Structure formats: C-alpha cells, structure tokens
Length: 152
Image 1 (cartoon, helix red, strand yellow):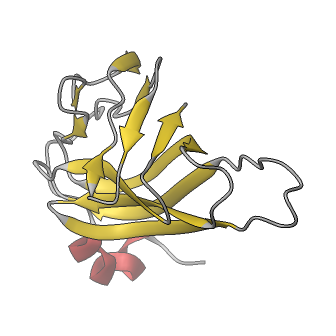
Image 2 (image 1 turned 180 degrees about the horizontal axis):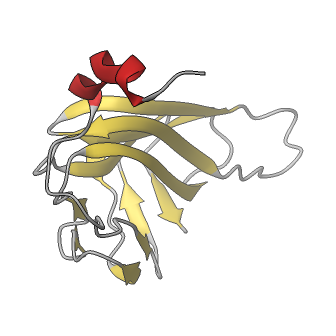
C-alpha cells in the first residue's frame, strides 16, 4: 500500500495559497429584456445578477473577474431572434478571457421553403484555467442581415 511519501513528486502541482477553506466562486446573471446584436462584435450584457457568491461579477459591464486562480466551468446562453427571418443567417456566441477567445459556437439558420421561423437557443461552454484578475466576458456577432436580438 502506498503512503504519502510515495506522492512527494505531486506536491509541485498543489495550488498555492493559505491552507483552510477557500471561498466559493460562482455567479449567475440574466438578461431580462432584449439586446440588439449587429455584425460588429458586441459584448452581451447580463445586467441582472441572480447570485454572486464571492463578489466577482460586475453587472454594469457584464465582466467576471475571479479573485482566485483555478479551473472554472463557464457557460453562457441566449436566444437569438433575427430581424429578418426570411434570410439565411449565422449567430456566433463567444467566451473571451482578457480579449482572447476560449470558447465559441456558431448557429446557422437556413430558410427552407418558408416553413416559418425557427428559433434556436445558443449556448457556449468551456472549462478553463483562470488566473486571479482575468477578465471573462461573453461577446456575440451576427451575419446575414441587419441584425438580431438576444433574449435569455
């Protein structure tokens, strides 16, 4: 049977910091209205916090800044509704850390014999190692017509 001395080489992988309980880091925020998205890259605003366990979410700018380094699960979802439903379109939702894309999803909507409008919720998610002070935001853009509106 192995003892603690058999795992000495793993100590270098231990997270630095004080021993003891680590504060929880989690938040949820929502869009309560609608936000227009154009062909320009647009920050998606989630101005209504539902909870923020560690005071790390800025609802005015819709940016999450962790106080501690660690591995985080990041999920964002919206419902895009096109301005012109009769034109083929693409909606892109991106998770960005310090201005660099770390997660992306593209949803395509193709008009098929005018069968009606098909709304597809768009969700992007990733698991990513964040450093304390990193800035996480959700951005989106749209192509195919004048724009779209996102709801949550």
